[in-house]
Amino acid sequence: MPELPADLPPAFFPPTTPVAVSRADFGPDFHWGVSAAAYQTEGAWNADGKGPSIWDEFVRRKGRIPRAETGDVACDFYHRWPQDLDLLKQLRIPDFRFSVAWPRVQPQGTGRPNPAGLDYYDRLVDGCLTRGITPWLTLYHWDLPAALQRRGGWANRDMLGWFTDYAGHVAARLGDRVQHWMVLNEPMAFVGAGHLLGLHAPGRRSPAGFLAAVHHAALAQAEGGRALRALLPAPARIGTTFSCSYITPWRPWLSRDVRAARRVDALLNRLFVEPALGLGYPVAELPVLRWLDRYKRAGDEERLAFDFDFLGIQNYTREVVRHSALMPALWAALVGARRRGVPITQLGWEVYPESLYEMLRQFSAYPNAPRLVVTENGAAFADEPVAPGQLTDPARQAFLQASIGQVLRARRAGIAVDGYFAWSFTDNFEWAEGYEPRFGLVKVDFASQQRTVRGSGQWYSDFVSGTE
Ligand code: FCB
Image 1 (tube, rainbow, N blue to C red):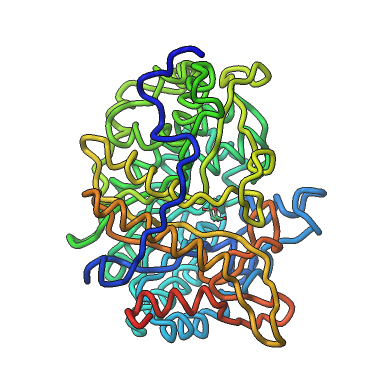
Image 2: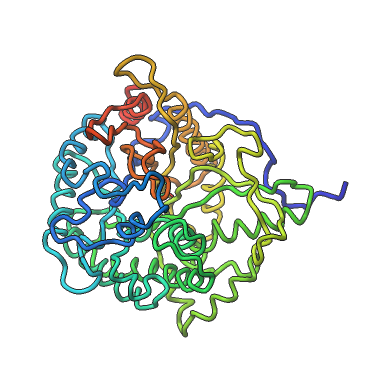
């Protein structure tokens, strides 16, 4: 057998080491919350002057979403937020992350804001504060105004001006009350799935469009941060979020698999965070990124960097990677969890809570890394009814428990991570997968809009309130 490369990932299939957790282990200042997003929960897709988003249009295209489901109604959170926030309060979950729908604020994406749109978020923020819930606001969770897509969307550099203008309107209205801000939700996910794979809105499959969108989203991430910094009062904390998955080579003794894993790591985990930290794009590991130069202008390297107060880590699984001649430029393929015969969730994602620890370790290892917050983590599992009116979801509860254990493991290793948000508060519209995958701590019956707290939700409630 050839000699093993010196810097292998820590282990191939390391055994799961459960870490016992209690609320007290995290100290009083740790943030505990749940996450949600506008398009996945609000519904009211054309209410009160809201313009259509790229998702409103995408879901109407034939064959895009199973059972032709849409987010038109979703959890009807737009109308039911008072009851949902009451439930959150009753569950004693102190922090709530939600996103603002840009086309509610600016129906055509530019120009004077729609007062009814801003009023809605104003009420929502006040609704949190009067219940003692801390709001965490994401500016962009994928629902671009459709009018801007017609002008090229993320592939058009004008996005920088459109986006910072939008950020300014939201900050001006809510900045006096919202302290925790996130600029983008998972740029790699919306740029990759939306512009290269065609699986998400706007449904494009264009390598050139993808590269343009990468550069403009990376710039918008930093420019959005600067726009917020200029307007928000001092205690504001400005962050942004990243999708990430621990990458393991399929056969760690084969250097071609190890190199493939490094390329996929550069694409999935490093592409957006490194320019934000002033390190530029990871071109050395993924040479195809040189093509980004076509979209760069003088001064862009500096403009890509921003001094974020925190980075949001969003982790669900890990990926196992092998070399593949079939995928030009990346020369890599994922080895699916089903093929590997490992435990999986309803979406076929491997259950691998250690991935969260590995990602916290990786993101904290940058010399100038700011503090980290786990802004999303969770798992989809189908309900298994045990008795009428009763639901148990032991798999989801075990996943959350194990993941929180990995956060504790990271803190004990000296990693500065000071928050954890479960995805998601309620079941919701899971993008290209529709309503079937269930991520909620709270079950939603979409026909009646009835909410039922799952066992995992009760456990999380007891855990975060220290009564478990
Ligand atoms: C993340 C998204 C979030 C949700 C979860 C399951 O990538 O940010 O909206 O769909 O995955």
